[in-house]
Length: 147
Image (cartoon, rainbow, N blue to C red; front, top):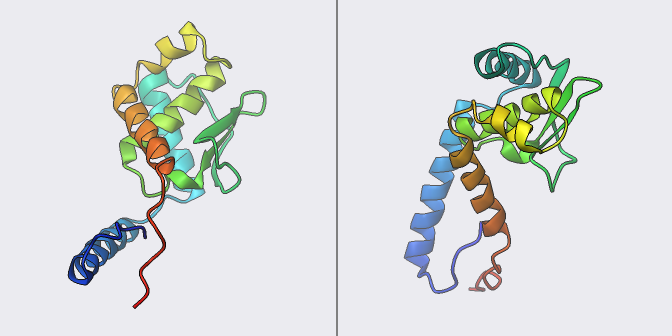
C-alpha cells in the first residue's frame, strides 16, 4: 500500500485499517471463476448482442499486463486480465462486451463501436479504466518511513 509520507502515524494507521476493511469486503464478495465468467459472458451476449456472439471459452489470465482483455475470433476464445478482478461489475461486463463484440467484428472500426453502444455503461467503464491506467503512471511516494 502506498501512502503519502506527510501522513502522521495515526493517519497512516487509520488509512491502513480503512483499506484493509475495503479489501476484506471485496474478497468476501468473491471473484468469479472461469465457469461463472463464461455464464456471465453468455448472458451479456444474449442481452446486448441477441445471442449472436457465442464464445467457446472465457477465462481469466495472468499474462496480460497491458490489455484488459483479448479475443481470438477464429477460436471464439476470450481472455480477461486478472487485473480486472475486484473492479466494479459494470467494468468487467464492459470488457466482456468489448471482447464479445470482437467475435462479431474483429477490428475497432465504426461498426465495432456502434455494436458496443448496446452496452449502456460503455463510456463510464472506459473512463474508469482510463483512470486506473492514469493512476498507475503517477509517481510513487518516497519509500516508507523508518522508525
